[in-house]
Image (cartoon, rainbow, N blue to C red; front, side, top):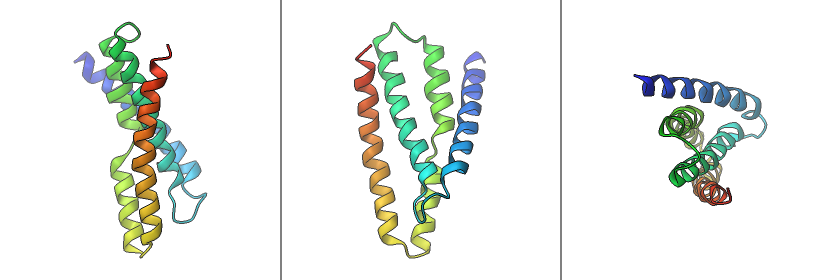
Length: 123
């Protein structure tokens, strides 16, 4: 039951922060959802770092890892919103913007995970 509460708390904080960032930045660029993009890239960097330091075994307890990775990062990042926004770009015929948004999100997301893992080794 404790683990469920940790995921719930982390997810709640992550979701609130995602909402605030998306609200602040999604209207800045036409045909590019900057808020969702930033949230997902930051989330990739964070989860790479969190899981990297967790794997070292001496920085985070399993419960802290659960709170931060599954809870916070799970609530913070949003694949469903990313997919919906991609669908809306396709629906309006914005094929180029859809391609850029999708490719950048995936490629930079994977790079951010690798960077987070690398940064975790610096501790």
